[in-house]
Image (cartoon, rainbow, N blue to C red; front, side, top):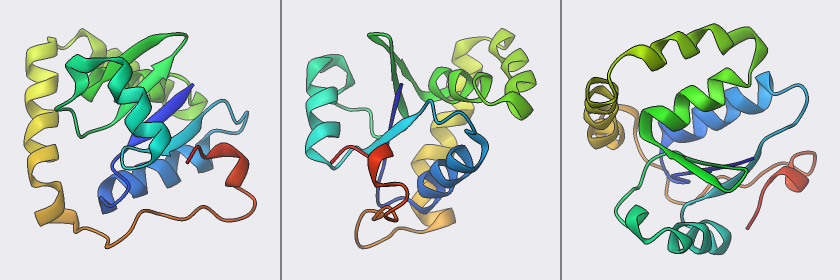
Length: 127
């Protein structure tokens, strides 16, 4: 499973750090949307061309926005209970997600460059 994220977004980078910490079985790999790998994955699904938020690629399925966040949380044992929010209508979940996504740079800030993984994490990141 690969999590594609906005590599210059502080909120997105914090989420990735959270997942790394909680993903004890190391089931997730990561790539920034700005990376060659990220761009290639997005290009495979042209309808995602305008998506600049978290994307989960899992078993040839693509999850975006709130679905991606909930699918990721479902795989983290201590937070899998949050999957119950899947029962909230998609329009409502994605509406909240989009408000946060549109304001994420203003609220949480933006980096000049994408996060560079530590040597211990390098094998979990696609470039």
